[in-house]
Image 1 (cartoon, rainbow, N blue to C red):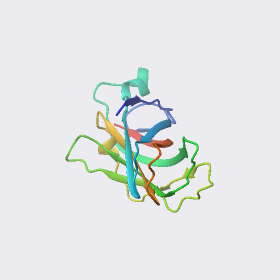
Image 2 (cartoon, one colour):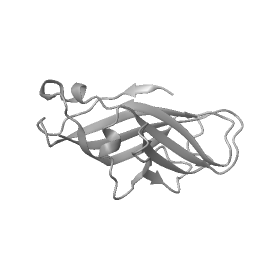
Image 3 (cartoon, rainbow, N blue to C red):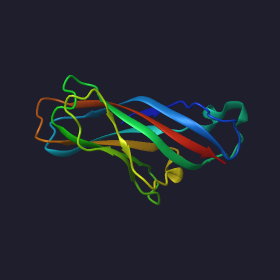
Image 4 (cartoon, rainbow, N blue to C red):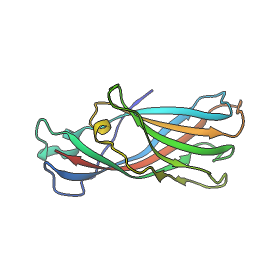
Length: 166
């Protein structure tokens, strides 16, 4: 598991109660084989650094009060494309056992010939507590149609969050 620091683009003036767009691009996932028919998972740990994101406007004690997933796109990062993949599910989790893992987006079915899959965002998400954690685990599940014995399956993920800072 690797720790990935990501950058954000502010979409409004910085300060408490303001919203900021947070883009994560080319997050790499490798599902290590052998893989079996059904769900197979890979995860990457990220950290949202508000001080780095807000820079001069950061004030000690600021935190994420709300977070909304705006978009998520998965791309194959191997020569197989989406061959043998029924669906994908994107989830977020943390080390805090009081904050539940949440399935945030999915694509079912996936066209085997597609170059990318734009995921459908789940409704009624409450991601503020998750995104305020020191470490966030981004989990990608791929549902395989049949066993795959010949190596790993690799994917890249792009997603955009809207963070409200207080």
